[in-house]
Length: 236
Image (cartoon, rainbow, N blue to C red; front, side):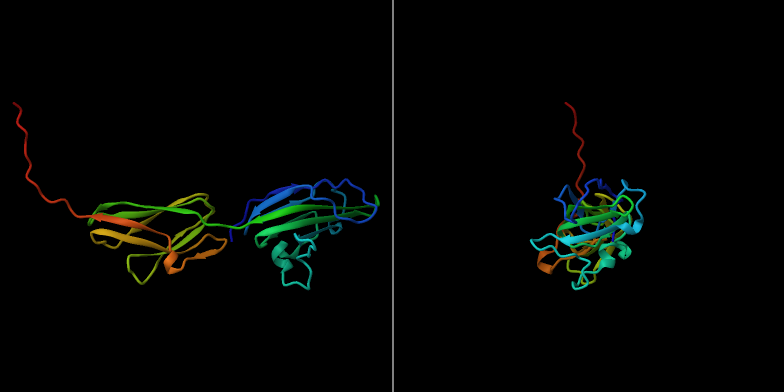
């Protein structure tokens, strides 16, 4: 699983509430599926860490806390290491959809009890790729190129023509919008041979393609030029 570089959300907790209540949504946060979001409160440095308590709720007419033990959701996944208390927490692993992020802070010395809630949208991760291939004469080396618009790493499983055994290409590292070059080692016949993608894993999830829907590109192999006599044009 790849992770988003830390995004710091500073909450200004300045509203004294006589009755503990949820504030109206003050901002909307959008993250990609599989990213990790870091939430941090910097405005109350003197409040003990145990007095910051975070919650995440499903956005619905009757919001459900994802930390509710009666649900099947895992708090150790959504709050990294299950650490949902403290001035800084990390959130990851939420399914695509809208959520409410709630922060409750109380100060026994100043006798304050504050709550704010933010809307967080988790965007579904989609794979976008474009293909091209060299067209060469038979016997010459050729490559297939795949351009991704997302963030890697990428593992591509592919096959060529009617080959039964697939091959694997790995692009390691947190790379944004890369173009990978896959050298075609086997000798291809004249004409067009199809390069098929069977699956792609981008570190967030695996995209498996059924045989009838596999992305593909054609690799065109030309015959060697026939030998022809060379004529020298005489000037008049």
